[in-house]
Length: 283
Image (cartoon, rainbow, N blue to C red; front, top):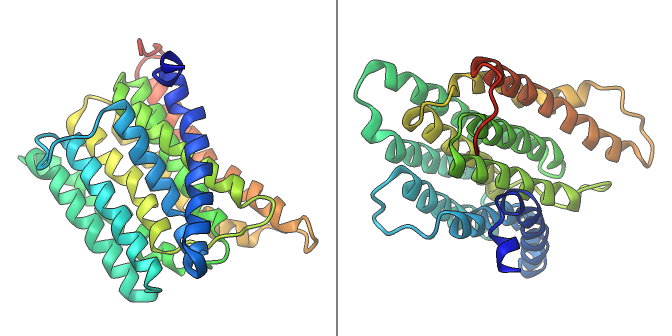
């Protein structure tokens, strides 16, 4: 059993999927009246558990960008859960999420900002972070599938791009976040049961932080991740699809929005593969 838990494939797929399902369900029950909003925090919780298993719990203050990622995610989990338990919504919640993401990105990226060229990826990541904090909050909170599908797509693109570029720990974390998000989506199919509050937007910020490390501290072709950004439009596109107004309509809509989000991620992954010359990662 111990060998199975330390298998990279299990750590990147089955285990985070099961942890995501369990964490989302337990937080839904433990949150009482706020459980529907608190449930998405299970995604970040599962991510942190996998991080502790794969990388270990880093020291504080952390000496590396990976350590900063862990403690930023932990702080975000506490922040999002606190906002949802307190019933904080709207602009106040958006500003809190934006502040957390800006501070986390600045903390992680700080040592790498030694040139104008290095500042460009940070500017793009801050723009995506602004979408996470503000534009995503405009989505209907009782329809979390679209935002979760975007999270799944961005995490998938970061994880597989890191895998192609032989960044093992980032690949495992990105794919684990993808699987944990899948656990949340399973809870919300065929019927969407939860809300996408501050905890959901905190989780949606995690692939942004992973992308920051990938872009600033590795030799991976992180620029290809730009091709995954059209996934952000999956929600508005889903609302324009001729989904039948029947009992199975919402379930079909969840499938449709997930496909719409994943397609740009696959394009980004394909571009990364081509730029490596089509060589398989040794990892």
